[in-house]
Length: 160
Ligand SMILES: [Zn+2]
Image 1 (cartoon, protein in one colour):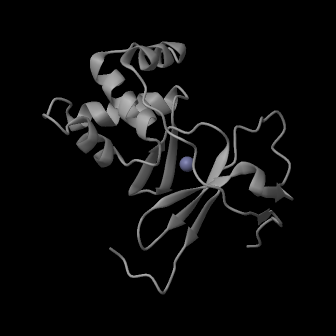
Image 2: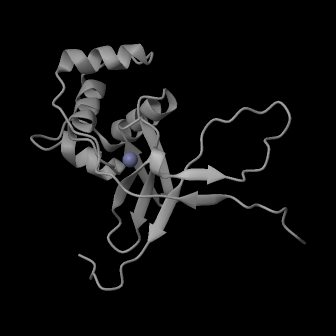
Image 3: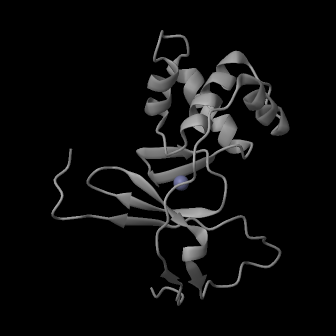
C-alpha cells in the first residue's frame, strides 16, 4: 500500500493571544441570539465565562468556572452547552486527541501549539502560517477549514 503524495508545507512564527474584555449578560445574550441559541441563564453564564477570559478550556475547566461560587450548573449541562455553542459556530472545538477536547472562544482564524508535557495550548497567528501543496478537494466539495495543531515538547522544562 502506498499513500498518495501529500506535500503540505507549514511555516510559522508566534504572536500573543487576543485581549480579553468583560462581557455583560446583555451582550452575551445578544451573541447567543445571533447564533440562533436561546439565551437561558445557564448558557449566558457559560458564554460569559468563556468570552470574558479567552483562552482554551476543557469542559472540566468550564464546569469549575461556572460553579465557582455555588454549584448550579450540572456537568451534563456544561457538556451539552459547549457542544451546542461549537455546533452553532459561537466557539471552536479543538480535538487535540480523543481524550483531550478544548473549547476556544476566539473565532478569528488561527492555529495552535500544544505542549504535550504541560497540556497547554497556545495560539499561532494565522498569517504566520502558510499552507501550500494541499491536494485538490473531491469534486463538488468546499473547504470548511484547516486545523493545525503543532505538538511540542520542551525537554528542559519539568511538568507541573
Ligand atoms: Zn486558540
